[in-house]
Image (cartoon, rainbow over all chains, first blue to last red; front, side, top):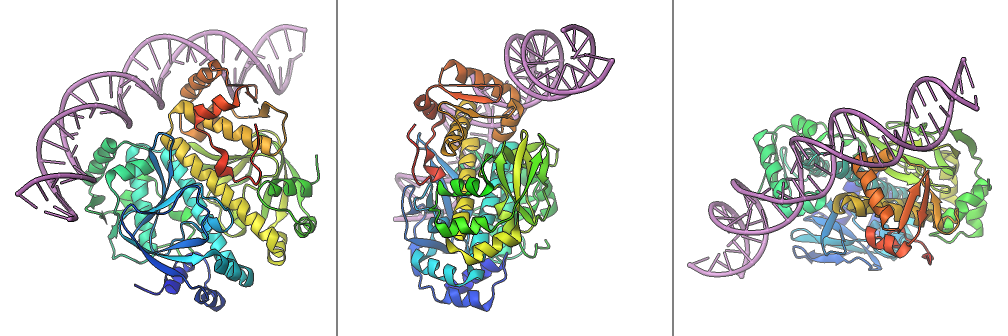
Length: 243
Length: 243
DNA sequence: CGCATTCTTGACACCAGTCAACGTTAGTGG
DNA sequence: CCACTAACGTTGACTGGTGTCAAGAATGCG
């Protein structure tokens, strides 16, 4: 595993200019590394955390719990993501954060982050930008889950998943990890498992994409984008990927 | 109309402590006031604005435009809201902002905001918090549009609308403005007009709520909350309202 | 090997979308 | 002031897509 500083710096570099002062600020943090088991919660709804989570390895997710006990997954996070940055400024968690598969996270004390935010304006704006892009992804999810039919919805999700993984340069061309169950994907996109299953099969038949055993294979990126009406502008990368 | 400074200060005060330094910072802004006609765009998808919008009167909305021309409304904004604050840190708009009915807005140059953000940490954190709560509202919209049936979805929307209006103390007990058409509500919640219409009628029959001529009447708040599974925690008010 | 979870398939019902028509309201101009 | 129009709200009929239920196949883990 790379050093925590490098992981965060790489991530922030996707959308912000990571100056030396920012790297120095990152270096002053003393995070604590922790392993998470699949499905383990790291933050619960209603918590008032005093540390923020950085994903180092594996996949994390944020979710709401409904009154009937059902779960609504809100977002998924890979290495470099900071899924609960917001807790720096809004005390009480309105959602939970859990591991999807086995994961490694770093826990950074809020106090340290606040200190560097106050001292290093570039660091502050990079983190702020990070939370704003987070919000842009939520907006896209609203549109995806509200305006697209199940097949397009899944295709769009797969596009985003692959594109973000590639931006993180974690994976080789054409493949990325996607350690979700079909049930969980349904709980993210607001469709039933049965429909997820049928639509995934339809997508497979298009030969644009395959998703098997926690691996997503993109066979025809262009076509997959069309199926999902995917336009990566909302991810606000400094340098959009050529695919 | 109140002064722009007061309107923003009141809004920020809902979730942050508005110190004298913050008020001073606000006073240094020299916004330009502008009137908007119903349905007029103030920011378009793809724009790179150099000013940020503050709602003074009326209702504004953010929306995505889909490839088939359909519109997905993402959020609605009342006096005090800052619907495109994010443009301070992410150059290119990934969505548009329009007026719903006749509206007054103030336009604040980014340069001025950046200057005060750099100088006044309390101001920066209040604005940051504002954008984070914005994101929390988006998350709730994901859950609402993905996991609730049409009736609950509408009920939840009406709850949020009323609660936020009351937080802004704009309206007298039991009523608030809601200048949407049923078509627009459908385009926000991902349901057809016909279904919106039928569900609104069902809700009327419960005597919990009425919505007629751009006025929302809440007759039984408790019951309406139950119908919409509404819990205002995600709005992160400093002092939750007693209703 | 056995158990649990996940994936897959079929049957069926019904909710919600679409289409179409009509009623109502508000705004415009003669 | 009324006639006209456009936008919006309302209703009914119909249909098709999705959800639910249920059972079997495949996969993975201890």
